[in-house]
Length: 243
Image (cartoon, rainbow, N blue to C red):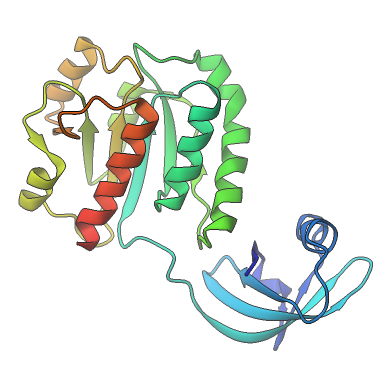
């Protein structure tokens, strides 16, 4: 069922009226929706509405509410990602897959071996945010994650998180399963996952992690590309919490 974001003030008793240009254009023009078809709508209060289209005019779409309920498409803890931007399609894949895996927000961070210059990354953030918005619609996310402004790695790890976990290909003492068995994720805990560029973190950055007493976790003996490492790390975090 197609899924779209709305505002709660679009709701009138047992009806929702879609009159914003983006939703109207997508539903009426791109999808060529017709009366009798179903739409899944969600508002800023994370209430999901199963609806049936009853009328389409030149500017508005009228939908009858068949059922409404709180959205369940969310993690029980707040997962954030600090990640060194990659080139081209690999970064778009990260934004999309991280959104599917329930991320709250992504901090593009400049590292010593970053593949993308700071000014280039800054010019891409609007596009990355749009990818996350579209991915949220496709996987029925209740909250759209945020692509934050590009920052230095040191600034990000000094932010106020309940804990910060670094994934690295060396200087690691334990894997994620071992770490989380001793330090389980708590409900509504705010966690930052840090993943470096293709070239890995520099020795200077590893020293910084040690100075901050941050756990450095292994993803196993295989050497993963940075985009694969992101998906693997986030997926395992979600699995270990739910498992």
